[in-house]
Length: 371
Image (cartoon, rainbow, N blue to C red; front, top):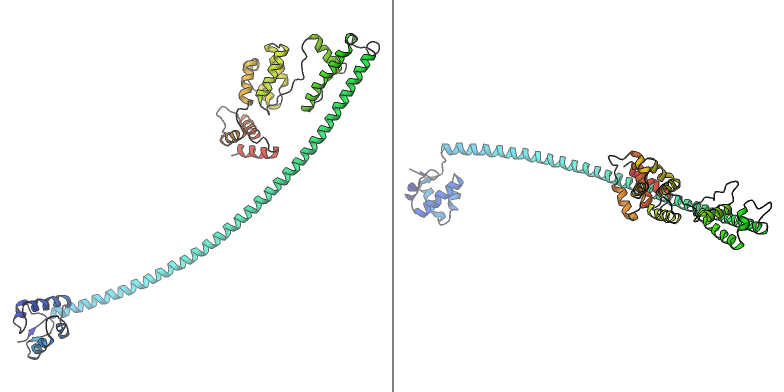
């Protein structure tokens, strides 16, 4: 009876001619790999000559009929492989469709990004153009303001020079009249008849000092209807030390230099504390006067305390770049009114940009106030 090579055991294989232990193991290993062996598979096994298999087949000692279970297994395997192939084809189609969708979305995204970038570049160009136009307008406005300010200064200087010359000529004329006719219709003040010519010359020299100070303050000297400027200085020289023209303080400049000047004048004139307070209040203007009026009574009536508050409020202690930093970080205090905060912002902007025009300072202050 022929031996089925696909179902033979190890012992069965040893019964075949020219098949030993090593060759039997080789046949079993090959069959475990391929499940079903054919004559071609047997001839490909190493160390077993092909004529061995030809002789066994010719003599009818072996055959290659598969088992019924093997056939069923092969059929199931073929069906399984076929289903796997179909699944692979479906997956491949899905993958191709997915790749196509990704590519389409990528193209759409690329188109959108191109449009966004173009719009962004357009917006940047428009903003740059607007900024350049605004900068040019600001430069032109600044030049116009500087030209106007230059013309105004020249006109003002010309006006005050002319006024100074007129006042000097007037005082010289009055002095000559008093020298030539110390009594009579021009001798209204009997004191003038007792003043010598050198004294009157000295008075004329003193007169030029307040005139120049008034020119700097853009204010004319105040002379009453029945009192000449020379009369005022004659009266001051008789009653006590000559009191120079007191400059005013509006809160825009540094308080400390002004206070030093005020104390020097007060010391020379030997003012009491009450006189210092009265004269200081008379000299306050604008923000400084507004600040004084909003203080409590105990501060208003005390010269030393008031001066300390004025120094805290209007004393300059920092350089412009430090004041600009303080302006950036300025915040309204819990006990600070909105109006006081606005004044503080305006002051920091003015002091932080001392060389800038007023319109620029106003822009900076408003921007900080509404930030």
